[in-house]
Image (cartoon, rainbow, N blue to C red; front, side):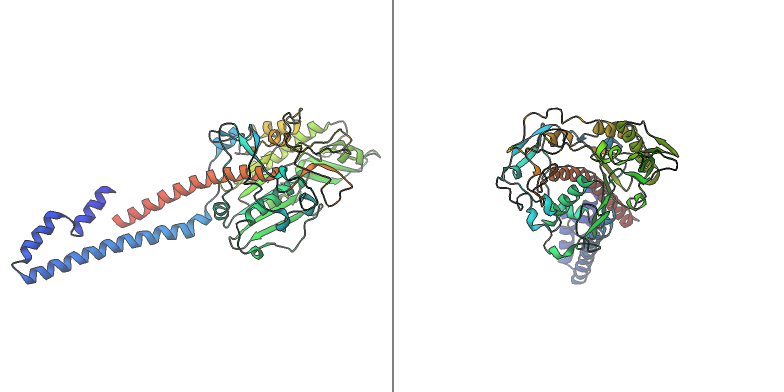
Length: 439
C-alpha cells in the first residue's frame, strides 16, 4: 500500500525533483507551462477519482453485503468448548451489585408477560433487579443494543422450547426494544397476544427487517395418541424418535435456541397417562432420564440432517433450576438476595445429558450452561408477584432478571462470530477493489 501511494504521489506531481524541474522549464516557455499545469491537474483528478470510487465501492459493500452475511461460519472450535467464549469462561463466577441495572422496564415493554413483571405486580424490594453476573476472569460484554440491532438486520432468530424459552424470548425483545426509537415499528406479526399455551409468536423489528420468534415445543419430540391395544392407563404417547411436527418451520433461520426439561417429570407424563413410544413399540418401563436422552439424540440427528450450520448458529440452553421448598411444588420462599450455596441445584441430569449429546454431535453446537449461575438466584423468581398471586411460582423468573444474562451471553457469542465474518469480508472487498483497479 505504501509503494502504491508513493507511485500515486509521483504521478500526481508531488515528487519534489519532478516539481522543481517543471518550474525551471516553465520560466522559459509559457506553452510548456500550460501543458505541465494541465498534466498535473489531470493526474490529480485521476487520483481523486480513484479514492472516491474506492470509498463508494467499500460503502456499497457495507450496505448491501453485510446485512446478508451469516452470523456463523465454521465455528467448531467455539462449539466444542461449550462453556466458554474464547479464553473467557462465562459460566463460573458470582453475582455482583451493579447500579446500572436493570437494562429495561418490563412495564414499558409490551412483550413482557404481565405474569413476569414482578415490580409491576407489587414487589416492593428492588435489589433483585440490580445483580450482574461476573465471570471469574473476565466480564460478560455489555449489551450494546445498537450494535446488536445492526448485527441482526435481515436475520431470523428462533426460540424453541417451553415457557422458560418464552421468557428468554420476551427478555431479548425487551432488551432490543430499548434501542428502537419508534416502538410502533416493533409488532407481533399475527396480532397475537402472549398466552401460556400459544404455539407460535413472532415479533418483527421492521426498521431493521428481522424477526424474533418463539415456537412452543415443550418436549421437542412429537406428542401423539396412544398406540392401538395399549393398557388402560395409557392415554397418550410421546414419540421419542420423531421430532415435533412443527420442526420444519425452524429450519430457515439464522439463530436457533432450544431448551427442554421442565415437562420431563412424572406429573406431566405418567400421572396424566402419557408414556414413551419408539417406533410402534410402547416403552412402559422406560425411565424419564433414558427417554430424555433418546429424545435428545433424535433432536441431534435432525439438526445434522436439516440445519446448515454455515448459516445457522445453533444453541441449546441447559436446565434452569427452581427454588421450591420441597418436591410438592406448593411452597415457595423467595429470598432477598442471591444465595451463597446452590445446595445441589447446580447439578441436573438433564444438563448433563444435553452436554453429552452435544459433545458427540458432528454439527457445531453451542451449549449455554446457565444452570450454575441460575442456581444462586433464589431471589429472582416470580414467587407471589405474578398475575395470579394465589399460586406461588418458584420456577419462572421475574423480568428484568436472570434471562437477560442468558441473552447477554448468547449475544456475545453471536457478536464474536459476526465481527470475525465482517473482518474477513472487508479484507476480501479490499482485495477485490485492488485487483479491479490494477487490471
